[in-house]
Image (cartoon, rainbow, N blue to C red; front, side, top):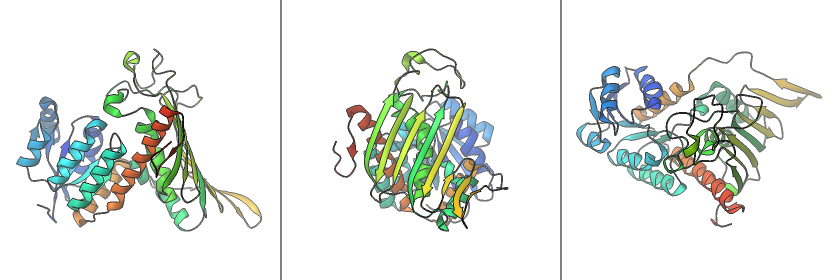
Length: 354
């Protein structure tokens, strides 16, 4: 049953994203939220987190949690392979859902999740926290004010020098669905699409590489299991959109580049351009070429702001189907990039053909 007072939240998955991000963010607003249950396939882990964080109920089965505890909202913090089943179970139990990115393993799963959210009249939001950074929100205001004009091209980069995660299942294609494209590239891709108004994709061309991940090497994020590395270590692509815009993308867990990490979105419009991280805007004004850079932006926690926005929408019962629809759209693009890489051909989104 939905409540208008304090939101009763359950957590599915007791790993780092739950303990370091979701739970602390919810507990920052105790006047609006009570975390009442957590589940994990390893019961001892769920119980330990529950005891540490003051959560009343711990389970080893989220289906049992959904049946036995009355909940209003669920955070899903499990590997990508399990997003769909957990999301659908929570939606059908009458809960709003915040599911970590990416939405799912493929577009068919994401579309099914979207359809059920709409049918149930529940909010389905994905963990694209870069949207909530002050740089992105400020850029959005400039864009909405017409400062960039028609945005006709974007460049997306999510590149690490040697940033293959040495923990979790990030290098396991069966559980993750892919490597840097679906893990970190999806963040910058969503940021670009969000700022561009989430245009409909038309044609997608992609290429993946597996050059460094299957070798032993220096790991800036710990030692990875190079012998069981089954994902790409780099993905590149180009996307054209039905509105005439284009986007180029580079994403890598490991590449021989100077910087330790680059997470960047660059936009080109006919009235101005922008780099987002940090925010710089480039324009021609009054016969001069000018660069605009904020001298001050509030210091905020994007993960926390994302979760607090989810809480606010749940309390207001502000169900926005467009959020779930955007999840399906970005999953469709990711699928097309991987399919293009496999076939060596451009993918026409509408027809689903080469």
